[in-house]
Image 1 (tube, helix red, strand yellow):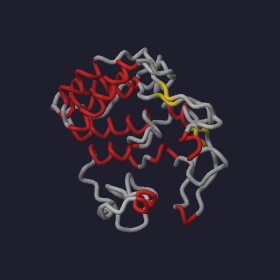
Image 2 (cartoon, one colour):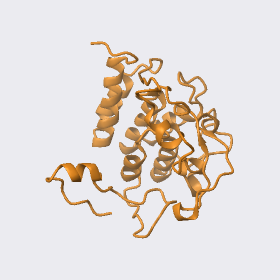
Image 3 (cartoon, one colour):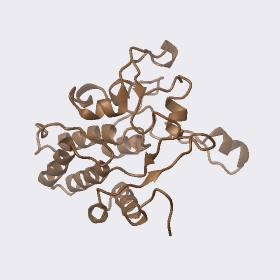
Length: 245
């Protein structure tokens, strides 16, 4: 089978790696990630007219109220290092501040794979495969191997899509599993920005985080699960009750 823009064998292995990681099948995740050619591209294609890049529509087109927060939405010890090359790849500096009723936080203009309506979005990134292996090894308590793959992402300067942190090796505590997992989360949040994986990553890696019951625009996540879409509820009488926060 052939689909324009897709390398199907690599794409299938990338998805096997992703979802085996989510399922806690760490050996299978590592094996699938190892099978992915990091120099092969698979890209969702858009024509910019009848079929636009959906993230562009959401976060760029017509100067919306849904622009990305400063620092990729990361706070505290998780904010990106100032010389991280992925900042310039994904974000264009802006002095714009969101209106108070929507949090009053600083926002940036989005670039990367989302700057234009006809821009393709990678199905997966090489860095995701490296971070899958980092997390899987960390969860198997092989922290030394986890740090090796963290550093491969941090030091990367020849990414096929141009997503290059170009940083030094991590100087955190490689014997502290929580610290290693935090560094994996930080790199996933930056490397895979606007890929739709952040909520799952947060629930999985920071499972003890308790969302606030109050209006919250700045925390890592403000819910564990979101309500069913209104369109689904209006058209399907069997839609279950919304999950608790």
